[in-house]
Length: 407
Length: 168
Image (cartoon, rainbow over all chains, first blue to last red; front, side):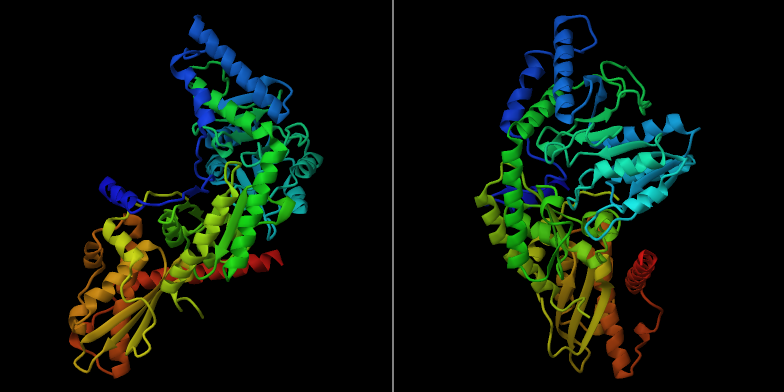
């Protein structure tokens, strides 16, 4: 198998321009972030932060200062509200399981939307095995949650509502503050969680402004290292651990703290917030150029998700009709453009993206979808290169499709 | 919903990059389709068959992934010059072997390609009003699988319609 991959990689030799746009699934870590992390492996703070020696105290200091910075970016009241986890998958699991289990005698209903990421959706579904019921709120054609239906769904039994602040696939910016108000109007005791992985560092977002009880953030989504994320837990909200073991500075996640990753996450946060306006304006411009260039330059396309300011600044998701997505990702890869698809063919089951189906896209539209996210590091030349490659790639794949599937 | 690594072998990549016998055949004797775009997999086969029941040429069109394109392409090469009776003996396993192996999640691509081929052969004899002995058994594994996938597409259509009605 590895031999095959070596050959696949060989087929990419000679590529002159590479543009990585698959930030949804993993990201580059800029050198300035890596450089910030390196001393924490062998020069300082490599100790366990709970132990009584210098490298341990250095680690303690580093972790607390990192939490303080991230707490400030999130608009927290206290740094203790930031709980580091090994990523957003773990933070979402912790939020859904850890917040609902202590409340199981109060109620056993969880409300989410139809377009939550699978690390919310499948965790909630799993809780059904433990007697919880899960209500999924429908969304409109752009992915916006129906607030009336949300209000209808929340009742005395509802212990948790979880809605993403920005949808990970189609970039829909939910009215999270209003949604929270709707929830608390119906039941002030219902906890409100948001996966803010695609909001943090990308749109103005604050846990107090949005009035959420729990919020997930992720390092790699803002070009920090993988393997680290955090769950904001509002002071006074009770969350149980989902794993047991040695507890150190992180009360909700056992195991030795990974100080270099925490430092990398913090550095990535600083870089994202340093020139926030400029960074996001740059991303919005490139995103707009990419969307316009593709929808105008390639026939039979459909933009998935809302347009303009209601869309995350980095998100591009376009369906190419009569064009299967996995084939297109390979074709683009051979030209140095790296993207992902909502096609079933890149997944284990023959089911395409549940997000695209929920906004009313047909199955073949979901199979032909391509997801891209731009970063502040992308240039106009990168986008021009992508816009030069995509039409030809789509044309070649459509040439193989021919009249197949045309009714 | 989970993803699997897809370490395609060089043969599949080559056939994906340069598929053989792509395109609609205007003078095809018989045409057959398998799969459904809803499942992200659909193949059309075109066969030109002479009066000795020998496949003179074959071509395909494919809506599908790299494995789908590669297996379809290789089937068109494998059947060229074959008597229909021999083409009938091609199994999805021999196709999978011919492309140098497939990741297990992609087995259905080879199955669908052979399903389309077998449907084309069956259709040819049905049109001719002839029923050779070797064709008399029930549906082959590949044909059954193609049907199963198409049934899934029908089910999904029904579910989507039901969901739309619920929202109205």
